[in-house]
Image 1: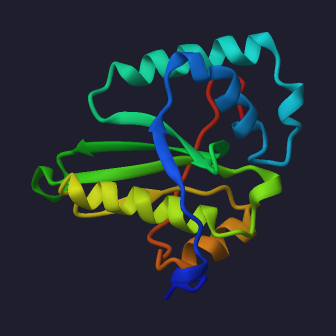
Image 2: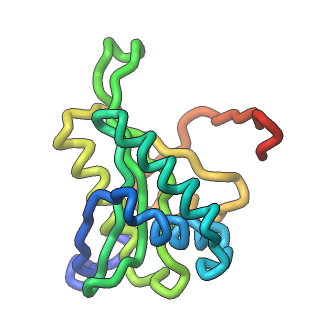
Image 3: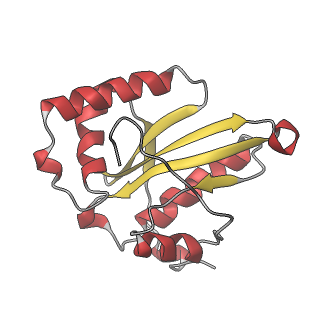
Length: 163
């Protein structure tokens, strides 16, 4: 079931984020929980550069920046991997999904997630998985409207004093 009519969905462009995009990506990620993107610091940018460098070491793990009308409006990361489960079939992990606050509700998230699903299918993945914090009820409704279903329970344990 489409959340919006196909004719009303926006055109977007994706590109792989590179280390020079660290400040932009940090600002977009700050908006995930309605933080202030202008409040990101040089330390945040340096940390994001390190993350992007680490991700580049994996052959199929990338962050993407989403553009609408040549303006950055969203981002996500996608990892394609095999594991011992399901006979080693490929699967995809969608993570760090965020649309800038000013662009929410315009269909960008739907088009972006559908593009991630397409990329996973093209890679031969048998499923795409994601995790969403319990407090993000709007995100849960969004994913369910796109056809995702809750499967199992996700657990986490803070390490090194992080939540």
